[in-house]
Image (cartoon, rainbow over all chains, first blue to last red; front, side, top):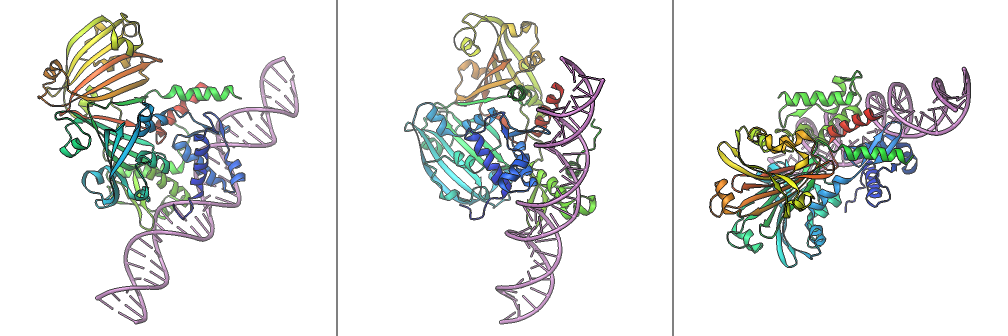
Length: 255
Length: 255
DNA sequence: TCCGTCAAGTTGTATATACAGGCTAGACCA
DNA sequence: TGGTCTAGCCTGTATATACAACTTGACGGA
């Protein structure tokens, strides 16, 4: 791990995110105020302010001047994480997930990958290739590139035990995702890895994920068309207000 | 408009964003350093730092300790918007959208449709079948069922002029959607309507949409695999600052 | 020529301080 | 009883200051 300590404001953020994800702090609960953090953690108020402000920007909490800081409703977060981790998806179906690592290297980004990740041509990126199995049957070929300085210890990970997406979300919350789905005939190498029949259509998901406002990973996920469906669930940007409004009501009731 | 002046850090952000979008500052150009902003704008360095840091989080600029701040090259195209309506999607590409109505009837729901829409077997539903064209080339076959009492005047609509999805959102905001994407070989009738070559894979999107907590429409959207990509953009907790601001406004109105 | 060192400029973080403005509970008054 | 006001807490912003780490280029010695 890193020898250098994380900056203090980040430690505060991690602390609060930890309390939220552990369930100690639940939606609409009150988060310690800036001054309480100053006392408890021996930091200046500006540092506590930065931590809470960034948590606001990232959607973890909502702040109301004069009242305090409150855990926000988290509905959206779970769905993307759920969709992003194929291991959980398979386990949810009651099946067994295994994974074979084909490649785990440090490379120089070029072409489409450099463009997708917004890095210079030739920048360091990690390249992963894995095959995911559902009950011994190959279900996904994951071809993933990760910006190197986002995940410095990437080469040390055992991705047959922890999927890349789980590893990446552990480092830092992934905040935004963009994906393109395409039906296509994959090339021979991919067909062979996924044990696809001749003429069987394939489903390719190209997914780019942001953390802290910059793209950090770009993945091509090949699936056999006959054995896979891609499910998604989302609330369009137009009307996500009801849930948030409910939180306000909930807060009022509790006081 | 707001009577109160914007905070200084926001004015700095607006200033720099303005220079970028006007073309005065081009990708990879150097942005004034914190100290230069301090001198020029008569602010403290922390204020300039906050402005530049937030512009970094939002992807406008890239900062390198020891060197400076530079305009980043992404953001060239605007942020991806969720496109619900295939007509808008086609227009956005600068192409012409036309639509042919194959069927517009009142039917009794059965089987998969009744189940998907949570209505009794035999309940009234409208059934639409349309082919969407992008510049004379068929791009989507829309096979849609709509709960009858949600859209009583459905049979009177001219869907070659207004797409079903635009019509439905006009009736009532569609608040939630669930979709499954599948790669498949469509049947002969669909292949013919979409002018698909033999062996060409197809992309099927099955989308179910809720309004006021109940499913109101279920659509199967068939696309030719060689001519269509499905793009999506998810923003779970993070960077939805505009939306969050709207929520705050809403809260104020409610109190 | 080559290499190391150093200075200057830049970002990144942290602190102490200050003032403005929103919100609420409880004191106070009619 | 009912309304008003205020003290006290909270967030939001702004400033001045400080130190650390990084990058570049200039300078000077081997």
